[in-house]
Length: 307
Image 1 (tube, rainbow, N blue to C red):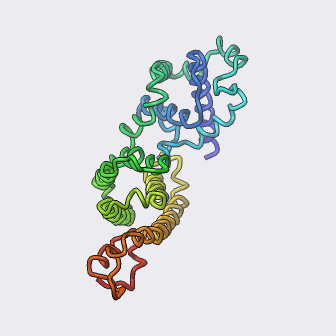
Image 2 (image 1 turned 90 degrees about the vertical axis):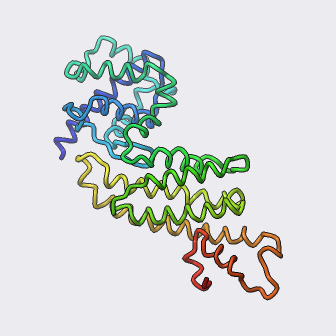
Image 3 (image 1 turned 120 degrees about the horizontal axis):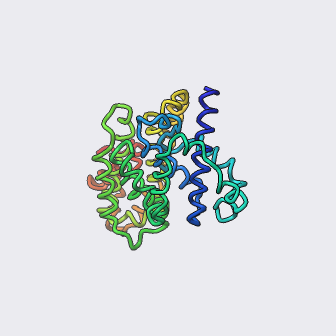
């Protein structure tokens, strides 16, 4: 393992340094997030038959493909970057006449890197989305990440938001969830949660409940990515599988807890409806009210209500 790791580190260090050099020549900056996606794209463009493919180990995680080795390599080169996240002038000038070993051995990398950074708009705005569209293990991951998680993560309010479109993104995602047995529990949680969101939207309560729905929506994605990491990783990370499986199971419990907490808060919004709409004179529940209450996000908390 140590010998393999050392070899991987040397390859990724050389590859990253060449990428930084070429980007400096185009006056382009880079951060750790874009570094991860750029190296991954280079790996995929090289193709599975290339000897380097397995030397650049990745797994799918919260924000797409991730490599700990790439992250460590970037961190080790921070001191070579200026405050604008570009290779500093001293290092850049010292490399102008340098022959990069990785390019000598794999000349195809030069064209791949130059093509990657040739279009600034693509590199900064579109590359990370293309990575999901072309390489994500499951078709549901693009809408899940960009049309569901990102909305919950970034929008503090959806007062002027098309909630029907948001719910439709959920349904689109649900239809593309993995069908293998490992994902069964998560798929059930997702479908039940979606049914309750759809009901809230029909009641025009989705916007009012948004502040308490954001966390469970985000936890849906962050739980799913823990599952994906277990099943979609390069062989280099096989030794982590048992640990990651345990983390996923613990994350599922966190997801359930988040949904339960949200349910308690959502009930407060329900009771704020007009008195004659949600209360009858003998303070008992009507059949319709029981059905609504049992369909909320935390229906497991309503054991005392029999429909």
